[in-house]
Image (cartoon, rainbow over all chains, first blue to last red; front, side, top):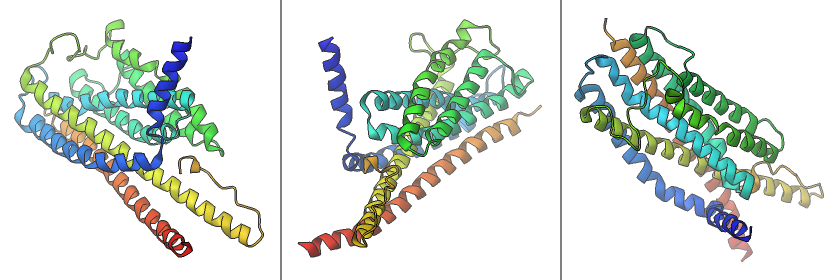
Length: 272
Length: 51
C-alpha cells in the first residue's frame, strides 16, 4: 500500500516538474524547431517518395498511394487520443494544470486528423471496395473515436467554471480510451472488409520494403508534425493564460485604486 | 478507370489540413507572444521605477 502511494507520489513529482509554465515555455521554445523542421522535411520526402517513386500495387494499382497519407493519419488518430487519455489521467490523479491545457489543445488537432483518416479511407474504399462507407468494425470504431474527440472538445468548453469542464472532459477522455484496443483488434476480432494490419510489432511486415520505407518516413514526419502543432498551440495557450491573468490583475489593481471590488475574472489563469 | 482523382483528393485534403493547422498554430503563437511582450513591457518598466 505504502509502495503504491510512494510510486504515485514520485510519478506526480516527476510530472509536476513540468507544471511550471515558465519552465514549459522555455522547454517548448527549445523543442519547437527540432520538431517543426524535421517534420516538414520528412513529410515532404515521404509524400514525394510515395507519390512518384514507390511502386504501384499489383492488385490495387496506383490507388495504394493513398496509404501514405491514410495510415499515418490513422496512427495519429489513435496515438493522439492515447495522449489525450494520458493528459486526462494526469489531470484527474495529480491535478496537473498543463495536462488540462494540453487536453484542450490536442482535442481539435486529433479530431481533424481523425476526419482526414476517415475521409482518405473513404477515398481509398470507393475504387477498391466499390463503396464510400461500410459499417465495418474498424471503420465504425474509428468513427466512434471521431465522436469521442468531438465530445471532448464540446465538454471541455461547456462550463463557465473551467475546472469543472476539465474534470468532466478528463473522465470522458479516460473512458473513451476503451475504444483504442477495439480499433486495434477490430480486424482480428470480427470479419471485416478492412484489411488486417500490414505492420505489427511482433511479426515481419507483409508489404514490400519499397512501400514500407516511404510509409515509415511519412509516419515519422506526420508524428513530428502533430507534436509540433500541439506544442505550438500549447505554448500559445500558456501565453494567453498569462495574458488573461495579467489583465485581470491590472483590472483588480484599477478597481482597488478606485475603491471598487476586485474583478474575479481569473478564467484560465490557473497556470499563469 | 483512373484512380487519380481519389489520390489527388486524399493528398490535397491531407496537405491542406496540415498547412491550415500549422499556419493557425504559428499565427496564434506569434499573436500571443506579441501581446504578452506588450503587457510585460510596461510592467517591467514599472518594477524598475519602483526599485
